[in-house]
Length: 398
Ligand code: CTP
Image (cartoon, rainbow, N blue to C red):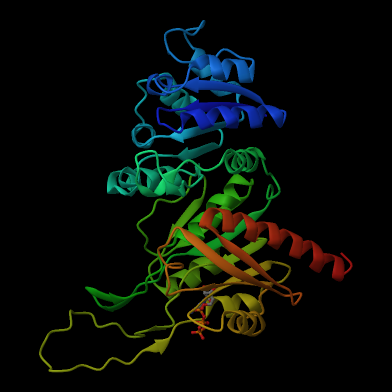
């Protein structure tokens, strides 16, 4: 692969030399790009010697005026290690005042960021907000490690080791097209069930897992129809978004869009109960106590299970206990091919960036996926789904 290695100015800049050596050893072509601040820590010559190419530093030094564009266009992956708080802020906001941030804007391929900084800078809401923006943009973040930092403090902020960063680069660069020609229908987010014209009941679903699945499917070449309850995150680029509010609306949109779908994933946290007759007017505070009677909503997944045909049907089970047993039960009762079970209630699940799930498969197998970002979990779910479809087709002699 052709890799751009961006180095920004932190004490960990010297470790980027080890990363450059490792990437070269793995047979990649590496073009180092350093910010001015990085050059205060390490000499460009170090990288030039390791990569066999002149290290790019100053935007106005490059032979061609459009140097940044050609470097960006010719490369497969951009990795920035260390990524300082300052550089991440620039990237998050699209500032392009130096060579590295200019290349970043001109580059359209996968981006890997390995942050390193003082623990307080890392924990600062500004840094965390920028990180969130970059993560949502689909960039691969190699989390800093916890430990003793150069500033004398202890905590997260130390650059991940070069092997970990090189592995993330390899994963990011592996272009996958195994969902090309496929239509994937995904539901995500909570539903909101009105109580009157101004009130509703809902749940804590953030939509992040379903949106990560949508993003993964698009990047692997699928057409993606994303039917989503109200969430506060933007739809990934390239998906067809169908916004809905209630369980009944979600059901109607799912069946309207079902026909072309070969894979259906129900990641939405659908309300189980609603008021079947919503009052026309706001309920007034006249009584000392009120009692509401709820009726069940349609179970969309169970209905899909009854008419799925050849489609691969994947449901979710968010549980607070007995994860595996509940996942298996839902697999059977809703006639699914896979149930993605996750424990909610701790620091994982609703709203969190990471997830840890168990996949219960129609074949009887249960696969545990260790804690990882929701985006990585999403890719693992598709890996297993495609293997499962192959196994099921083989079993049916097709
Ligand atoms: N689901 C659905 N329609 C509903 C309720 C749930 O399609 N009305 C789907 C969810 O999208 C999810 C799966 O069913 O994929 C499991 O949802 P969950 O709330 O965990 O299960 P329930 O069927 O509600 O079972 P229980 O309340 O016993 O946990």
